[in-house]
Length: 504
Image: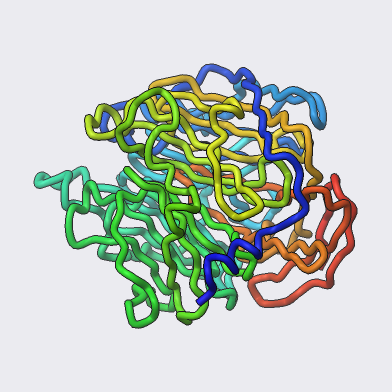
């Protein structure tokens, strides 16, 4: 097993100042609201739907209509600007969250929309117009859908879709101990066969299909809400065999119990395998992948690593925090990944903090993390839920959009001064045009950063687009892609501060 010291030494990269700054920018009026069926959710999808490379935002509204916000920023590096231009097909109520993906392989992004009610697969028609798919055989019942992930399994032209449901609202003995099943849609040629129920379900609030083993097969990790499964449940990892099954302790999977809200995944140790960050009520859990176990085995980072974010760092409320969306990203382009966490009380839970600022945990060269949310300017005290951490104005810096429950959605433009960067666009292939399941590797000297391309995770929030790397003071390097079929591209030279199309 690697020591903590070895893990942190692998992180050292060319450095710039850790100072991070964000400036608030206006958004169209938008609030996620509703009763107890909208205590959770409140996601946002970030993706380009009109072909200008500037990502749009599609925000869940709960009892309010969901809203598509067109990115009207005038050019690279200019002040962020959005306007509401929601097509009728997307202006629906009951939306919990949404994830962009190219379902039909036409290189136009579609949307999986999670709802209280029937989930929707919306066909991207170009120019930010959408219509329901009519020929996929996808049928959704009346569910409380709170999680989603997708991947392309070997030999299929359509993606496999996983929908995570929360409690069974029709059960008169609920809501406690009435967790609903996970719904799996696998393709049969050019349409979907009957839905499979993965049981037991333990009230999923986040899920991620991830190739944790780097063998070309994505398995399904699920983070579950202990508040409603109460007893007998735990976090889950499904082996995606022909007949999916849960991993056992004998295979390295350890029973793990938390009030799970969100999943983020990124290789921080430098060993090529993704580590995970799990949000919850109370401590947030950063877990290292342990390759020595030979299975999906993870271990908690120590408290000294600075990743628990367990109580508010401002506002004077000393009660435990409630974490929702989590995202890795190098927000100051120093070559080290940082962590954003959206925070907020479920509603009026007296044992949890009411004034609970969002976290921005900046990684230091020694591998520890320190809170910069207040100094960076993103420490809002609303009940935050979903978010997007993404370059929204094509300047190589990660901006931030945050959906709040019963409060105005927020937008922050990254104005951090220093740090080189690279944006990578994998060359599209037929069917799986986003290269989902692939790993992009960037090498500077003898250090390699790895990004797995996934659809899922977070809290009801997904994004699709170019892949961002911070470079620190490095000005050149090499990049390649390892696809899910294990084919490997040649190393491709690059110079910093540009978008590179990664050929294969």
